[in-house]
Length: 183
Image 1 (cartoon, rainbow, N blue to C red):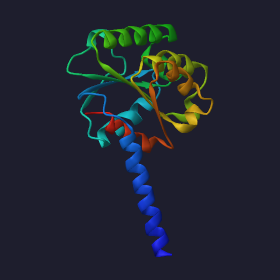
Image 2: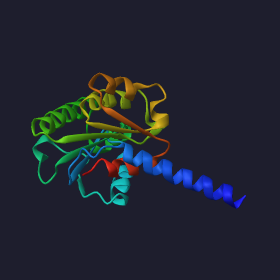
Image 3: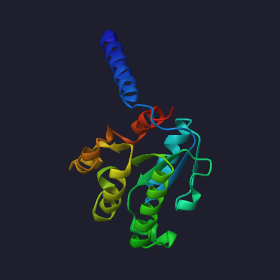
């Protein structure tokens, strides 16, 4: 029984290492993390970046004029929250305009963009989807919790530009490919 347990643990470690290595290091440090849609998932992504020891700054409502600053990579935590938008005093239209302008500025500067959605199925819906539809095609890498892409929206949006989509089983597993994305 002990041998089986040890064997299973070795397989689990190998799979974890393989999935982290599957992410090609595309991004330079440090990063700027911002929220697109103002969901609480932004806070979870901060935790993941801290655990991964990726140097970053945050600005939930970063403006194009914030770029590049010290940042060399833009991380977009995507997930719509009507409560979060309301608390920030931002309309959906204003958030869309900010996101478009921010993405354009990052592209103009040649920055890499990582799109991350950790809210899973619970954070999907019309509001989140409009932000996802805007951000995913602009990304250089997309990380998503598996059940957040049950309908294949992330894959569909990424396919035309051959953007890598890394699916993870749970939020805590998103840290490995996020860390591996940085040189």
